[in-house]
Amino acid sequence: MSSRGRFITLEGGEGAGKSTLARRLKDALEASGHSVRLTREPGGTPAAEALRSMILSPPDGVTFTPLVEALLFYAARRDHLERLIRPALSTGVWVISDRFSDSTRAYQAAAGGALGEEIETLERLCVGSSGPDLTLILDLPLDAASGRVRARGEGLDAIEGRGEPYHARVREAFLEIARREPQRCVVLDASLSPEALCERALEAIDQRLGAS
Ligand code: Z5A
Image (cartoon, rainbow, N blue to C red; front, top):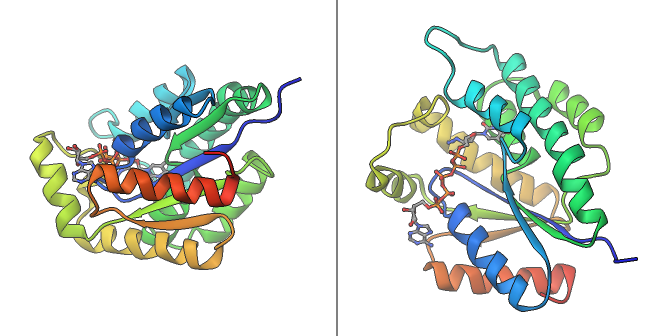
């Protein structure tokens, strides 16, 4: 029987370089002999991707209260865990997810309002002990992040458009999560080049999980 895989999550604000790092880590870990599954939140399974569209690009005139938005993220997350993450880990595959529960803590709870208790209840119900083995938090000043997003030339989704004070609270919330859970979280300087950032991430994976 193969040993359980490892569950790594990448967190941070928009434009921090999570997707770019995820692809590089997959290549590097596969070159070290691991099977790796890249995935993302919200999304990763057909049901969760359908919920992603509903949350990030709601039909005209549709808005969600903060609690309903959090419930939608957790509905997507539970499907993602049941149908993709847990089955992959149980067959020895390493899973790298571009965002997971810390995003709900940072965006919906810390930046969005006073939903901390409700979100921790949802976390216990939907995730329980299936949380990540390691979380890499990519930290980048807001002006650098928005420059990268602008350079991409795409429109803003429902959450990206929430303004600078909101995104400043998100950044601080991720750093606070890392201070609270230093065993699980490592903060990385996302202003490094993609190559240097990937090297730092691999060092953290090696130190925390062994055998990168
Ligand atoms: N959300 C939430 O509110 N609650 C939740 O529970 C969850 C999510 C799970 C998902 O958006 C939105 O959902 C997100 C949070 C919310 N909204 N916001 N804000 P998404 O999945 O569409 O997008 P994102 O997660 O915000 O990622 P992103 O904007 O695509 O950025 P990224 O993945 O971190 O960066 P990237 O695509 O790798 O790179 C961005 C650009 O920078 C690109 O042109 C790269 O070539 C460049 N880049 C990347 N790395 C570097 C480095 N190291 N140096 C220089 N340039 C770089």
